[in-house]
Length: 78
Image (cartoon, rainbow, N blue to C red; front, side, top):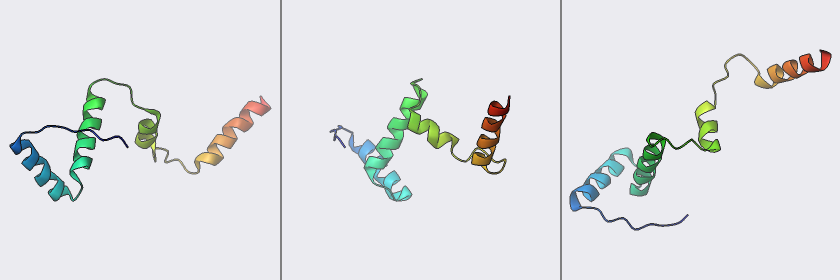
């Protein structure tokens, strides 16, 4: 993963450090989350992986594979 140097004020660095300690994650994770949020809000279309993450678990009507097969069977019998 590429690295980037970012200059912050003392208060920004202290805030990031406190937040990271509170959430028990590295400061880099807080920065990654903030960047991801900024990108989503900037209107950039989500990546394929982001769409998969968002849609994971949405199907609640039983076995999804069985449903998919039944739909495909309808195509073949039509």
